[in-house]
Length: 465
Image 1 (spheres, rainbow, N blue to C red):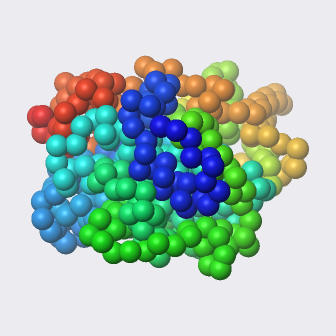
Image 2: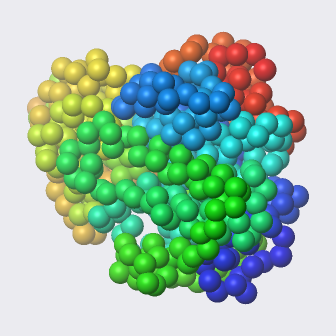
C-alpha cells in the first residue's frame, strides 16, 4: 500500500492505514513476527483458562450472557455472541502477564488476537491471510500510539494502565479490518472506541487484586462493539487524539509526538520492537528472574543463602513494594508483578514456570523462606536488573542482566517458543490432544494458507478441525 504519511491528522492516518493495508503488501518478516505473536498470545490465553486470576469468573459470566453462537471462548469451547467472546478471551490473553509486549509498543498480545478472532468467527469464512492483516493493523496501531507517548518522554502508565487504555483503538482497528470497513467508517469505529476508553491504574496501586489481571477484556469487547456499530452506520467522526478532549489531551496533558503516528505508517513498522517472555511475569520482573536463574545454575545451596539484594531502577519500585506483600503475594496477578516473589522462586527451584503461580506455588514454604531474606535497592543508573546473593560461607554472587532474553536483540529460539506453547496447552480448561497441539502450531506457521479461522478456534478448544 502507498504510505499515508502525508496525512498529519493521526486519527485519519491510522484509519487510512487500516482500511488500505493488503496482505500482499506486508513484508515477509512482519508476517513471520506476527505469527509468533499470535502463537504466543493463543498459548497464554489457553493456559489462563485454568490458571488466570479472574478468568473463571469472566468466562462464567460471558457464557451465561450467551447470545447468538458466533464466537468461541478459547480453552473452553463455548460459543457466545462475539462481544462476549471478546470479553472472555481478552481477560484470558493477558491474565498471566505472559503475552508479548515491548517498551515502545506496549502489550501487543492484548490486541493481536482477540478482537480480530471474535469478529472473524462471527462473520465466518475469514481466511488466515485476512486475519493476519487485521492482526498486523491492530498491532501497528497500538505500537504507534504507545511510541508516540514514549518518544515524547511520557510514561504511559503513570496514572493509567496503558495496556488497557491504549488498546481500545487498536482493538477497534483489528475488528474493523476483518469487517472490511473503509477509512471513513473505521474513523467512526475509533471514535466509538474512544468513548469507551478507560483503564485507571488504581488496581495496580491497590495491590493487584485479581480484577487487574483481566484488563484486556474491556478494550477487546469495546473494539468489537465499536466496529459493529460503525458498520451499522453509527457515525462517530472525531479526532481521537487532539484538543479539545482527545486521548492525548484528556489523559496526557496534550503530550505525545503525533508525527510518530503518522510518519511512514504503512511502510515502516514499529511493531518490530515487541518482546517475548519465557517466564510468566511482568517484563519489569524478567531481568531479575534471568539473573536469579543464572545464579541458581551455579549449584548454590538455596538453604545456605543468608541475604539477597536486588538492585533496580526507581521506575521498578512498584514491583518491589510494599516489600512484605511482594514477598508473599496472595494471587497470581500480584505474584507475576513481584520481583521478590519471582526471584525467590527461581533461586529455590532453579526455574520459574506456570506451576509457580498456582495456589500451591504461591504457598511454597521454601521460596517464602528465601523471599524473607530479600531486600531491594534503587539505583538511577541501573538498566535491567541485578541480583546479589550471599551465603553462609561468605561467598557473594552477583549477576546483572541489562536486557532480558526475549528482547529483539536477544530473541528466543523458535523451539523454545514452541515448548512454551506446549506447556500452556497442558492447562486448557478443555483438554487439547497432543496431536492437535502440534497441528495448531503448524496451522499458525502456515496461517496464510488457512481458508477459515474457525478451524483454528476448533483445535484450540479441544475439537478436531
